[in-house]
Image (cartoon, rainbow, N blue to C red; front, top):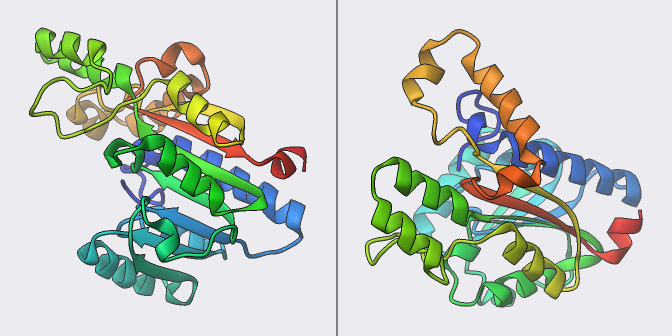
Length: 256
């Protein structure tokens, strides 16, 4: 995932970043603390962790890849936030082998559920890491976006397979083990005891528009960003989004 601070890359991250930043701002106001404790599970090289740290928050990144954690350390140092970013090697299944439960104001679970054996357990672990008043930012691959992409590429059999497969896979060569509908993700969040605060479709158009149009047409990036933002909250577009973002809130956070 790309750094939200980079304009071209923001086509893939802007919607999530805006929702996340707003949620963090609301937690700051509710807690009266300028700096929150944030856990980024599967945070890799810090594409979200470093921008969150730039806001003044303390971020712990859990990732199974030593190379990603090395890149995280370098990126945090270059951004001047090395003192607010900590990387530890681990995964969603053994999360509490490396971090304490109930210690975070916000948990990011971006691009993780697609790859865990038990997505429900992954969400439960993320929720268990939250303080009584906390928020969960959940981002996962959308089923409809994959079906649409395969169909538009002329792979109609694969599109049909993904549509029928319980995990949303288009074949044995599919690199993504799980894809989700908005209903499935909200059910996972609610099943873990959270209230769903918001659901957004991510990359509804960005992955379908030829890059040459975006890069060469004056003002195209800004116009596409506005279009993505306008479509993101509309349920009709959730079914064709490449990714789906769900913001979950504890009872205390929802009422603050």
